[in-house]
Image (cartoon, rainbow, N blue to C red; front, side, top):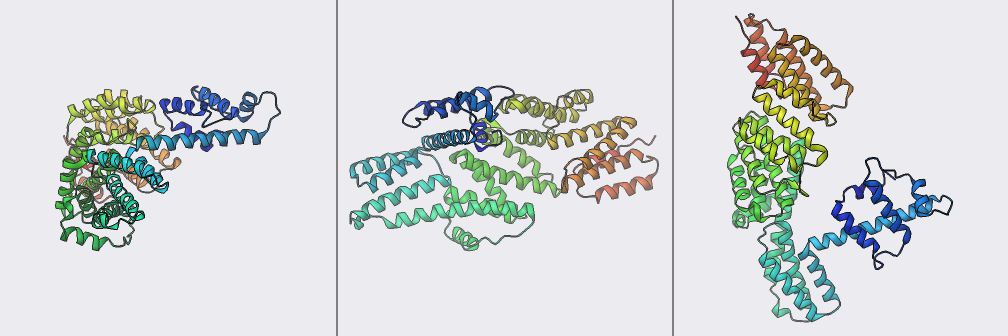
Amino acid sequence: MNGSRLIEIWNSLSAKEIRALGKLIQSPFHNKRKDVKLLFDFIKKEMAKPDPNLDKSTIHQVIFPKQPYNDNAIRYAMSFLLQQIEQFLLITHFQENHTSSRLILSNIYRSRNLEKAFVANQKKIHNALNKEEQEGLLFQQNQYHFLLENTLFESERKRASTIDFQALANQQHIAFLIEKLRRSCTILSHQNIIQEAYDIPLIQPILKEIQEKDLTKIPGIGLYYYAFLALSKPEEENYFSRLQFYIKNFGDHFPKSEIRDVYILAINYCIRKSNMGQSQIIQELFQLYQLGLTQEVFLENGFLSPYTYKNIAVAGLLLNEFAWVKQFNLDYKAFLKTEFQESSFSYNMAKLTYRQKDYDAVLGYLQKVEFNDLFLNLDSRTILLKIYLERQEDDALSASLNSFQRFLKRNKVVGYHKENYLNVIRSIRDISRLNPYDKVARDQLIVKIKNTTPLTEKTWLLQQIKGQKTN
């Protein structure tokens, strides 16, 4: 049962959701099967344990204690419980998306020819839309579907003269443009990763129309218009500046999940620019992270991703914002899921104390880092190499270099990452063997490192060569 869809979905539920699900399953309106109730109670009890026992034979003894084992009976109980969980997720979704569910209700009232109910419900939707300070895709789509329901309602009653068809057409087009631009940004972002060009139908006429009709005054269109141009023409920095303007001034008018995607696009833009040697973009990146924290866009279901937690700290360290990074590490540790808190916090503090040259503290923090995460493991090993080289601890450095190289060959580190870390190992080994009095060898190694790609530690490596003692 451990690998089943049932358990996969169960693991995504919060404690609050499981309690609410229990009430639904106990309700005879939703569930009349005793085996489903017993299965729910059993899973709830077991999943609260450190090592849950979800063996089918054990479950069968609990649900059907006086019957011989029947695998089909267990499968049926699991299937019916899964249906109840899916029903619960749908109900929860509709409760959380009030306007969208109201629109479905309008459709139901209209199809049943319930005029008074329809009019009253549409009025509630109209009031809700007017109160929403939103500019995102869902808001514009809801506006369109609201007008569409009114249009269909009036059309069915032969009252075409009262219909504002132009308003309907305009709203449909606005929703279309925003969705087209948003999806096109996603396609461009993926294109930049895999280095394969995609043909995006209609995008050029759309961009031309937006420019000619000054449609960027609609924040949803302006946001994605400049995001698309920034991604497609990164050399023209004014597009990114305009994107920053829309994020800063209208970001809190969008649903968190939607504006989060725009932040990620902007952050990836900054990272690509940084990788091209434009170090001044780090300040823009750091400001994006700070603004995103203020707008709470990086929190998903109340939690901060350990990768985002790490990346924000790294951006601050690149600008020597040591005090800010320390406070961030402390303040946002609680927003990590429990299983990530200690390891991610220790890693971030190790990065901070390394930059502060407090090497003893670094080693203490690295001992608390869980190496189950491959990239934390790789980064932590790199930090150790850097400390040993800077301290001139030759034996420890040699052992760590050999250990790291074996690790890369043994583990599934592929492509860019494997090549990068092997280059780091080779470069550190070359520096450790360099005669600081041999100027020719020094100059040759500097050229070699400058020409080596990929090599994420290039700046630090060059600093080590130039900083070697020659007296």
